[in-house]
Image: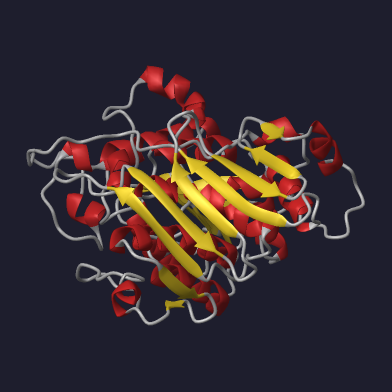
Length: 434
């Protein structure tokens, strides 16, 4: 359900593998064959819900496990997208077994599917995940895990209630450089940690003050695309990838990029099952038009140990997280690592640290291994929920424009009814978390 050309073509088919490298949305996926690992003995059957931009990368990877993974179904409310995805899968397998669905509930109810990849716009993540787990499926949920704090807790509760493996798509957890810096900070390699600075890119789509309602394309189920979000007329500027900049469906780059880099801050702070106690910030919002999410953001969370973590928009590059301590700083992103002193980078690589964090070198491998073992994955949904909550806290603080106190145990704001109402949202009938 994300941004792809409206009509499949042979050229797009041949180039589909390269789409996963798109800078702003790529899920950092490599084909399994690059890792040279032996095929597991148990075939895992998979369904993919949402076949747009980010799903391309997941399909590339899953199709690279021909002996251990079989994609049996795809689902999208855009007929052209789902039919293209199914034809791509069937062409790889040399059969017609992969079926295409318009409604995720039909796919989730199939008893022959083990795991579901959820690659839809954010406002659908929770409902699809809970329905899938209710039907006995393990789930891989793209980031951010949910749209709201209440939805996140509901997903975690469903995972525990139904005994399902659930992985959050924060692939930085399975990149060694992020693992190493989090472990180094945990072991006080920087001495006393003073602060964490997270920088994320600005919005990469814009919409003017006016827009025009358009006829719904024949291949699109617009009512189901909107689902639990409020009804609005269709316009191509507000569909597929552009959902990210409309607050009814997502919270912009705070949750898109923040979910990755704030997650590493939480990991390094040993806050995977908790969170900050205070948050404040400000942002710049569009004053008119279709897009409603902040174009520039700057918020700071403070933890009980006194360490602040700031997240801000920057224009000079992609995302990054910088740890500042008594001994200097370490800065890490997808493409590079830097330090105030090169010796810190060398120390970070030395073995034998007292605190050792779990290590995963491949996010998909980790999830698939846990589907077999029934262990919790490197980015279990409790961790995903807590990271997404940090994103939500920043969004709420910016929206209200005042400092807020947060109780990470009760998962509620202290003495602020308005802020507490923003932990959840009303859903358009007939959709609900119940």
